[in-house]
Length: 582
Image (tube, rainbow, N blue to C red; front, side, top):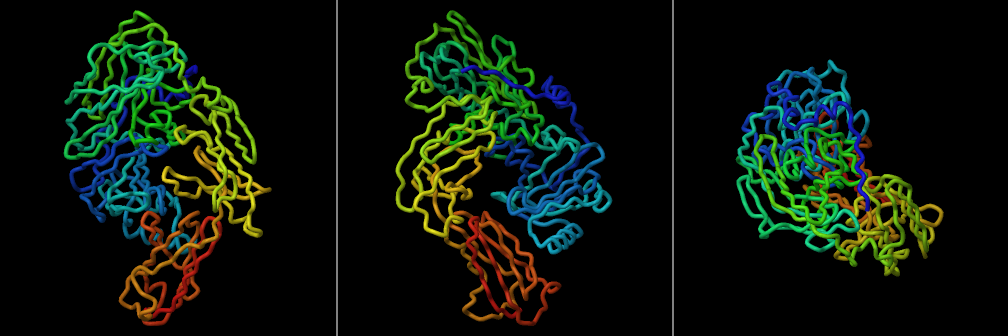
């Protein structure tokens, strides 16, 4: 399979990446102060591998608790306020005069003046989740002013501060570790393993046509192969490494700053994480061994560039970053891993070129394993036996040999079961998939959706809508697909009071509920007290929905009527009604 790299590099990008060393000098070193009042220790660094994206900032530990004071890192004004049940939760964006924007995510609450403004807008718009863009002169702060308090809101899995610095004009996140913050790091990165990938039909590693992994030995910046002697390679070969960085005072595995591959001391591949665009971040699935990530969770970074990988992080890379071995070649290969504080680790080994190998077990050449070749450069469509799929051009990182396996339905399934290609293949753009529904109970067509099945045979909802006899979905995932039905409403369970044991709730400061939907998922919710809309906050990761009782909204010392209504993705509705005294 040919590998033709595609680069989209702006003039700004070329300036950023032409020299990894000089790139660091472009960032102001003494402009920003710390957002916290204590020594900064990190649980995550910039450009770490996350599901379908790069980490766009750093995660600052907040001593294991919420409520720590968060300060503006420089003079500026609030340009955006975001409140969301997922993502960054409660977040602030501050524009600074030097052309950068600082971002503070997962806050538990804002400063009092911002908190009051947000609550007013939530009631005005009758929504918990919102994005606000205040006027430039509405909320201004000086360096060091209190702007909020650390927390665990949104998709956070523990109390911390997510902190970013973006270019204001482009909104590109930049590497916070290059701005001179007092973060201690004297520890070089760790290189765990080295992998080789055959990239064309005659490539081989140690006589095999399959990917091969080599164990390493070493520490403190110096690594070598455990295997004795040279590695034997033939044809076009791609290299990849499993690597991470350690920082002083932390046991967390953080991301590295740069990865260089040298062939006889000549640069072959260069990956540098100074900045990226959010429009590019999903290309992370081409930067890593996606199959390995799905299968084992390991984060293996490729040092070569797939045909449709459009990341801007490869400046200085020769061609697609691969190495070519012919019979009789003897080369010295070196991999240099650097962190953002200049600590380096080096892996060095020799490799010998061997004669081209005749490999009979190459999966892509076994015609019985696939239905059709899907080139990444064109739109690809296929339909058969109640199934249809439409994949747009540039949805793959390289051409794919597409497979489809069909099996009969089982109880509770209203279609054949379609094993669409495999879950180990990443898809960059969403594609359209449709499956014909069979023997659907009359009147329940609007309750149909597509579902999947995990490795433990547990069924889970994927979504979709019914139209003209089929259920259609737009998705970016391969795997099992079939038609199911959802007619069960969500659950609403009081968490801090028992309705059957009296109505006097005068001692409570909030109404707390557990809310769940076991299949399609909660879609909408709203709460009313005495017929008036009330602000309920949703915390999906903990299945919580709660309302802080407020004397400005409901009168103290009187009886009140509560109505809480939830609907799932298939419009199954649950209601909770309760009369109480407060």
